[in-house]
Image 1 (cartoon, rainbow, N blue to C red):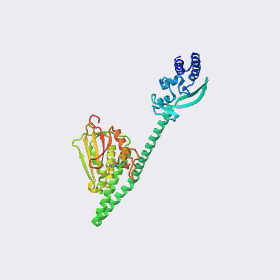
Image 2: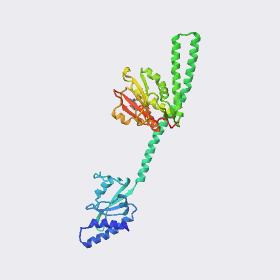
Image 3: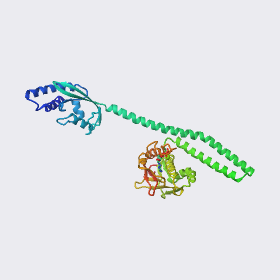
Image 4: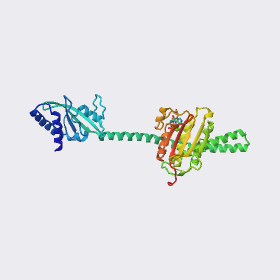
Length: 376
Ligand SMILES: Nc1ncnc2c1ncn2[C@@H]1O[C@H](COP(=O)(O)OP(=O)(O)OP(=O)(O)O)[C@@H](O)[C@H]1O
Ligand SMILES: [Mg+2]
């Protein structure tokens, strides 16, 4: 009976030097009786003397779960070891034991035994309940996030679907009008205006077609893709907006870049989001500073690195911390999901999305992608 002995040892040590021999042996017998009771309790359990706080007896579970206790374990010291050293005067009801990383609910009861005032401590292991609560919480958060993203995706799909028909009709009416103006030899200004309107409507249809493709492409398909082609698609989509803002776009891709191993639509979406943010950041700066540079190169790790560099207002230190959190936005019309989506797409591709301030003002948003060599 190792446990009875060890509790007995503790009890003997605790009472040694208090009085003479017979008193000491009676105390030992009392402690043994108390120890037998504590052993029968199905939780970690210990009794402390209320006068000096020393440990009188503890059951085996207590020793097993809280490890070896100091020779004259004090109640305060026990709490300290349970808290990893930080106990104020408050005695919390739930503690996290640092050495076992388990959670315990502590119950203190005052009692008396064999003429001694005792404080009885029961520590119930509640790790499972805490863990269940924790997983529940993260699951809930995830669900909330996915459902919000899903509704954004669904909204995009609905909009794309609903706008497709009227846009096609607008293009048809414009074509008809152009034919009529042509037949009637109508004013050339009207013809020019109609052509411009048709170009806009066709562009809107193209954007919607891309959204539909993106929403449909739920399952990523990774393949070898050339960066210049990806960049060209994205720049075409943003051409009108760039022209409207008189913004120069400088595409600086290193020659003969190796192909990337990626899902084309997804990476286009990332680049689109980053360039859109860059353009939005330059709205308020003087036109001559509105210059956007897209760089592409092989970095020191052999990955393909793309950098979108703007001359916008940059970012405060506080904003940098929250940048990639979903729903963080400083724009009145922003959803704050652009960068969060970019990050999950890039991480899915085993790459890295990063931000750094740009020399001379503005921001650099960049990402890395693996090269396709040997993979596709
Ligand atoms: N190039 C940039 N320069 C300065 N700030 C930026 C830049 N890109 C992003 N930010 C900041 O990060 C925030 C989050 O960007 P994110 O793309 O995730 O959301 P958003 O652009 O606000 O909305 P949306 O969901 O429509 O993209 C922005 O609101 C802006 O404050
Ligand atoms: Mg954005």
